[in-house]
Length: 302
Image (cartoon, rainbow, N blue to C red):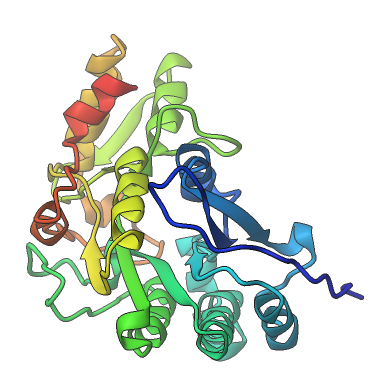
């Protein structure tokens, strides 16, 4: 039984020495935890999670918590992100975990936000594209291939239906200086190289790794303006995973000879489909004065 808790909050202006109250989901995750850390001076966060008694797939509970909060914004970061596990449940359709959380959970968030006049910032992914074209702009038509990507795109559609009340922020391969809990892909690679493991990485795929601190800055700017719609908050450098791993090794003075190239077809065989060249353009967000770092710049900051 989830207890109904009335939360009284006040709305304040960003940049005026006070904090805007935010309802957030997924705030303990890789991106969410860093956003909370960096934006603590601008926002006061109310975390909705299973740990705080909120299952976002429960429409009634979500509506109750939203109705009890005067927060003007919802940061919706919570999602099932395990591509391969989600792919195994594709045949379950709307009964799969990814659909229930990423689609129905998002529907509950959107409906509750609309009922309370709140705005929603939704975190999405470069995987909504098939990777056969590109580079992709915010106007490019998604064509998700994996079940995970399908559910994230369905979530995008729900937020897009909020018109000027919704922001969709697509990111790709996020990393940060000090990840809390599960390490990001950069720190996993560092750990493997330090342990003397050999690493294979595709040299025929292109990705745009994203420094999470830049995402946090983008969120600060977007929520402090009248922005709405889709934005690509991704790094400014497209690389193959093979080049990514070699850059990590060189930056941390690790053994590059442990790294070997392979094809994406071989590397992902038997796993969920990944886009081969899901390179996102970030011109739109940089037009707002938000500088998204290259991967090399981000690694130096680590």
